[in-house]
Amino acid sequence: MLVFSALLVTAAGNTALQSVLPVIGREIRIPDLAIAMIFSLSALFWTFSAHYWARRSDIVGRRRLMIVGVTGFGVSMLLCACVVLAGLKGLIPPLLTFLLFTVARGVFGIFGAAANPAAQAYVAGRTSQAERTAALAMLASAFGLGTILGPAVAPIFILPVVGLAGPMFAFVGIALIVVLAIRTGLPDDAPAAGDAPQGGRGAPASMPTLGSMNMGASATAADANSATGRRERLSVTDPRVRPFMIFGFVAGSVQAGTGQAIGFFIIDRMSDGTGIAPTQLIAITFMAGAGATLLAQWGLVRMLNLSPSQMMRWGSVIAAAGLAGIAFAPGFYALVFAFAVSSAGFGFARPGFMAGSSLAVGRGEQGAVAGAVTSVNGACFVLAPAIGIGLYELVPELPYWLAVPIMLALAIYAWGNGLLRTSQPV
Image (cartoon, rainbow, N blue to C red; front, side, top):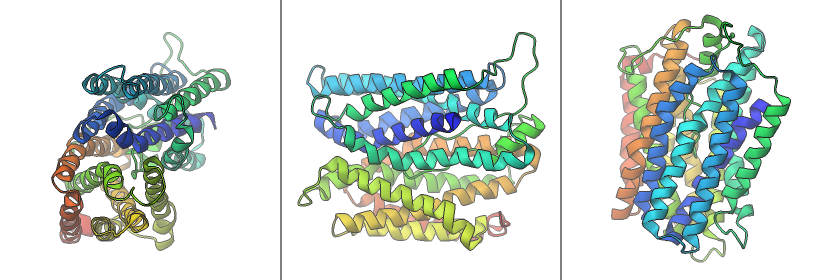
């Protein structure tokens, strides 16, 4: 439970921040595009640091790196909260607020990635072969649960004195509790001088984001790392996995671009006449999307016994239908339903590409392919959010209008490509 809590707090806090940041940007008069750039830079830092921390997880001790990850998250949240509060009070101008907030988020991008591979390795090194996959899958569920809890609790902490900075201050306190609990309740596994590294290695994971519950690394990858100890590199252009990486990058980019714009879309088009604060409207929308994604990933995929190929094809079509619904939604609740449909579609499509790429290589390369998946998932959040916001500023519906034919073309690609079409059931 302590290891689970380390991942839960980072996922919940990160997505809570994402749910309130559009409103913060409007209050402080930070341009929408600048808000997107903040998350893009943080995702870029995370993508590179995730591989570094995964390599370090069995050298300096897994408990220590979990503490590094959660502490980095807490420090980043504290800096973000102070910067936002100063900006809201008019103590610093919008441009300085943006620059300082970007630096504060960079702390999370660099250090927050340490907790995930360390948590995987800690569990993998302390479970039998029969227990390991289930235990690692439970860790993955922390990300999914966090993406629901974060937006749900964020409005509760918007208090009179601290205002929109309240959720960030709240998660600083939660992170401190988790760090103290890990330090006092989790056995230290730091190797003594001259000792060989312990067994069990974690794979790099993607940054938790709204509507994206997958970790980037799979339980299979961490399990294989634990069993083999191998650390091969695998290029995203490897012929065995290249079609899957193309699919994953396009689908992830569409989700990142449209998801980044949805908060501003709600503020500008849906907040009037509902009698509900914009932060609560955004929270409701993101909770619906996260719930639909979890339903697809945890329930429907197993119930329907879908192959990765079917998940990619049907997920793309379902996502296209939901994105079209967002563009033409006549009111808020229609938009919530459409966003849930699109999230369910991505909940099929993106795990389909991950599972398909995992099945395309041997067991000894599972850690390597997880690294490639992490790189692709991280790349999706570098430029796509800024592109989505740029299109939104031209015409609010434009990101969704363009996303529909892209996702339908992606479904055709998944059907027409031989490797994607013949991917075997998980």
